[in-house]
Length: 249
Image (cartoon, one colour):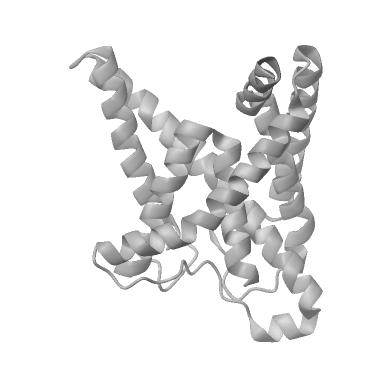
């Protein structure tokens, strides 16, 4: 039993299983985004729309390359990928269910009026034209894309890259442990604020309102902590599951 749990833990943390689990999110986004009839696109959709078809081909190629690399590493190391993948999926859904109530309560304690995270507003005309099934697929595509690309950008790149850079700077002023902790703390705060502010780029009129900005900053902190302690895949599935629950209810 202990040996099997150890194998599951190794698979859960291995980058190959992480990239394997990120592939379905990218696939759902690329295959379903054409069904999205939305009046205001989110951050990810604005970027993909701006890049056009070449951007979609590049994203698709990167997803396939990471998927093939993950399969090769899993086979080489004989990782228990099924159990690791199941743990990531279950954990992401559980964190998503907890995230909404917890963030709403924290927002009220600031004190600010608790306001749901305004991700997107659906165009009534587009929804009626494309039908409910297309609307569901479109919302799932938006949620999957946000979970994948925003976590890669704001957690893996911004949080991780900034922390490593600050660690080099602070390493000259303090001990190794103190420098590492301070670097990750500052990087977590800055990347979370950047995550919240970036939602104003597509033209979201509510992005800079105090309640929404605070909610998204707290959400960024939550995703950042999940990234640090549970890994990129768990953070991505939590983000995607939370957005899906919000958009489909």
